[in-house]
Amino acid sequence: MIKGKQEDITAEQLLDKIIKGIQDKKGRDLVTLKLSEIENSICDYFVICHGTSSTHVDAIADSVEEHVKKSLNEKPYSKEGMENLTWVLMDYASIIIHIFQKEYRDFYNLEDLWADAPMTTYQEDQ
Image (tube, rainbow, N blue to C red; front, side):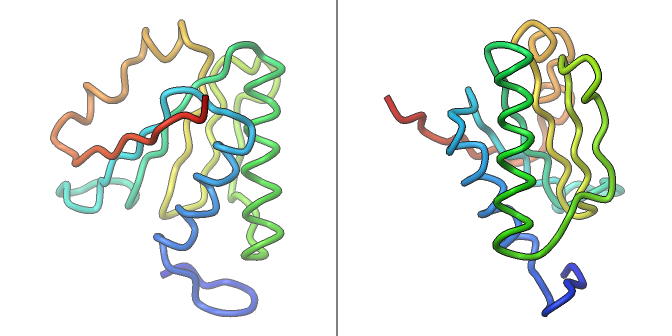
């Protein structure tokens, strides 16, 4: 659980708001990796998606932050990569979000690095 300002927030509640924020801005190839089942993992979930441009990556990151703040009154502990917008990392302690531009996602291939983790994929709206 995350100690929220108003109440205890579960990782699953936070995950739901993060997913909604990404889907609202049409983040591409959205997946979650459940790391809580992996020994010595650094968080409960990785959320991974990509945008089509630096503007799209920025919009996705802003949407996630807005959805979580509005719904759960939480801000990320840190947010990195906003200068170049090729790979934005948002750290909500129990969940780490990776928002890439496609070529950087393909290069770093986090899904294969954490292949032991159960993966959930999300349908994109057409």
